Amino acid sequence: MDINGLPLHPLVVHAAVVLIPIAAVLAGLYAAVPRWRWATRWPMAGAALAALGSVLVAYFSGRDFVKERFPDERSTVIQLHEERAEVLLWLTIIFVAVVLLAAWGLGGPSALASGRGARGKHAPLIEWSLVAMLAIFAVSLILMTIQTGEAGARSIWG
Image 1 (tube, one colour):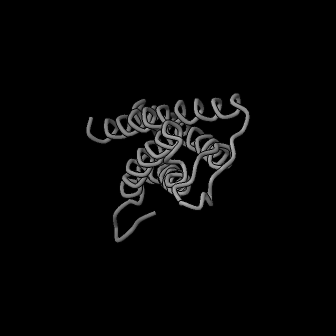
Image 2: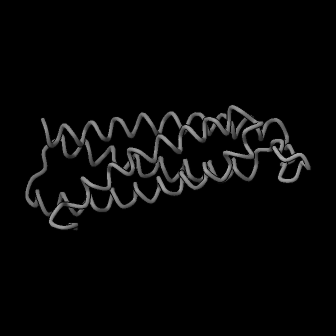
């Protein structure tokens, strides 16, 4: 897949590299600062879904890119990049599921004087579990993005 003669994969990976940390930081804020949940709920969910979309496009365009450029043999560096990309894809899918659960399940106050938009609290076990999962998956997603990008850069630049 090309855009104006340029391979799609090197172009769209930059979207994933930007959107994943944004979604992860928003998830971290949503988890750590309950009074900001009213303001970060939907941006977090939107950024997570956009990150998933960019990862899906990067993953499938990367598969096509490898088939076009390296039809016979792949180096171990490219194989490492492919393996990490698959882990990143599944990690992003799970992250989006956790984000959507947290957006629905975590309570918090409203910034409106009327109190409209406030979310009721759930059992502490549910709240703390969602907070912990958001934090764990946000950090894991950033680390896997760095590792996947580094493996991809090493496969091209050595």
